Length: 308
Length: 285
Image 1: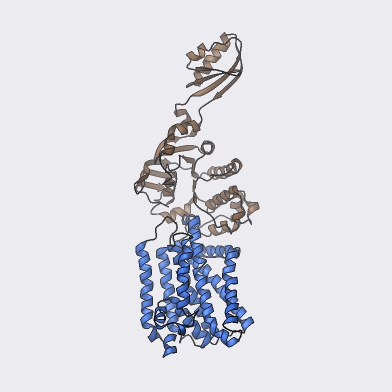
Image 2 (image 1 turned 60 degrees about the vertical axis):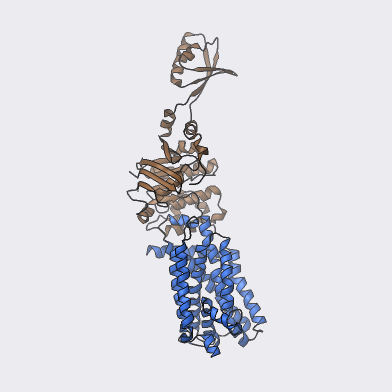
């Protein structure tokens, strides 16, 4: 187990940031922590990094206690923090070189620059890098000592889709080498495409945990079907299969159903026995976003950004 | 060993960044030069003997401004922007971080002193009466005594607005009481007594001895011991007061300890000054 968390609690005075978190993360995955502002994501990650001490509970990261074996842990984890900065008057190369010196072992700066795609900007001052380049430099710094585990707090916040994709690429490559990544994000699309496990946190508690596919399947969402048909059409058999007819939108009839597979089977029957032909079919399954909004719903407004 | 490597990497980084900052260069080079020319022409009237008399005061002012301004600000800015926070999650220790800032300040301070010296020599044919090794040792100890105080200001200041306020608040007493801006003899007696409670008096005192009176190290040993102790206590206090993050509170008990530590030192110096044969006693007696 890369990470084991048992009954983890963290309070700031009266505010409870984490309210009994249990979590086991095996080696080798990309795990996304999803949740509204103030849900406790950052607090959780910073406890794993050894930056904050838990109020109660047990935490083990790479077999170490982050609060006590901080020094050993720091050599083995790569971190990107949310509210942080780099000295702006140094070049990308100089910054990587400086951070490399902090560790017992480090990788060649040139290699790291090429891994994060900044070879061409090696001699550019950090202040002159674009937002995406700075985030990649920050990721390069997190990778400089060849860590076994990456902990990234909103690594792609504020980036355009192209820059975000470039960063995903670096994260995937790191993961492909068998290392684990834990990241927090606000982007559901990011969790869906990048993570193979998504943990939804709300008000300091885990409210959902699974692969993006599982989360979608588990939620009681409804699918929408649009059918364009020619010939006399009777929606009766489809309604019998559990579909609800919402009338026509242009050439398409719109249906909603909890079990779209049953509707498709009924549609096949209908096409064989009746004088109708299907000219177009579209279907929309509930997305992770719908599931997420269902899970956190009012939680998004529940508390201020006290803990984050 | 690894912390030495971290220290050197940080120190090098600070110097590289410093070289690229225009305002920093203005404060360490343009400002001291302006002071030199003004002092040299106005008070020294451009002749070597009078200039020699005012140079210790000028060096003292350069050391005070070089260790109060800039350095505290750099520390506060690094804390406020989260640069320190980012370093906190690496194996680098607070000791390496603080010492790298201190070494940077000492280096730029010595560079501005060197420039001031060079120009004083060229323009005013300035010469020191004492030996160069003694002179350099005094400057080094003076910097080593004051730079940690600048760092303490950086650690206790709440944010980038309070830091310059505290530095200014310290700058004027440190300057006027030391006898560097106004000759010591012109201060009223109670102020001369008060002056023994500030570190800069001992800087000015040692410099007067070496530069003007041509004294050897043995004769200025008293002030040098006070400066060395100030430096040691200052470095230790930095260890107590350093903060990685703005959200960490300044611990009141530690601050109290810091003030108490320096107070003990200077009360000691106050009472031992006559025994140590410090200048204002000699000059009057």
